[in-house]
Image 1 (tube, rainbow, N blue to C red):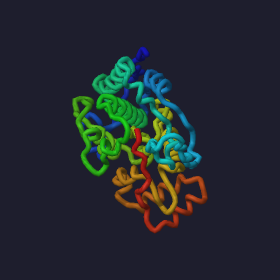
Image 2 (image 1 turned 180 degrees about the vertical axis):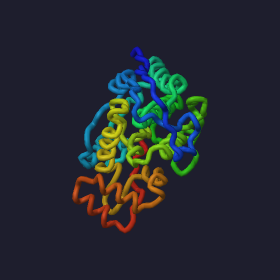
Image 3 (image 1 turned 90 degrees about the vertical axis):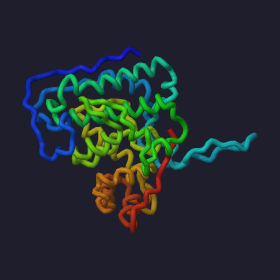
Image 4 (image 1 turned 30 degrees about the vertical axis):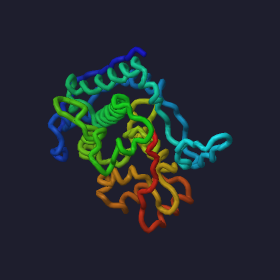
Length: 293
């Protein structure tokens, strides 16, 4: 696949600065809300369209038990979640040419702020940029590290996993990890809780990967769509107040308050049965997981 490089449409703007962003490195502060700058992600879209299988909304159905005729061997799957979430063809990353394309796309995102300061973009354009950089870096790192099977040890939410904590990016002169993007840049710069649904983790049990890049003009609609899909699936919520372990990882976004998290989830649940299960639960339990790549 021949990569199409990022295109920028530039106009003169005056960047703004926000005191609330004082925890961020200088290159990542500020925005220009009346900016006409727009980042084109046609190359990312082409890659995702080729590599992502869209499976649609969850029906909450379990996978039927496998037949054991002629063998005692079964593949280990989570029957509750095996049919859920869009799938990325990770096998493609074993192809040298596909990996070269992914590398080019990741690097083109990485260097963009060195060419045009992020403060010249609107906040929506910046959010789309960070989500795309995170997701393409995640794909690249999984491919480079040749990870397969279960990603539980690789993600290691309760520990400092190399996958999430290694400084694998240099953006505008700043060395960054995936964790830095997630819990420093996104958490400090964007107040809306739905940003957590834009971060693909590589495993079935996390937010779904889209077959399109995030764009400044649609990023909030895209995130809302991801939130609805995730929360109304067995990956996100289940009976007796059981919810995804991904929420435990993201509890700082909710001020470490399970009450705030419950309110957020209830705002998106569209099935009365599950609404009542979560609403009436004494306490939310971080039980739902599927670590399979």
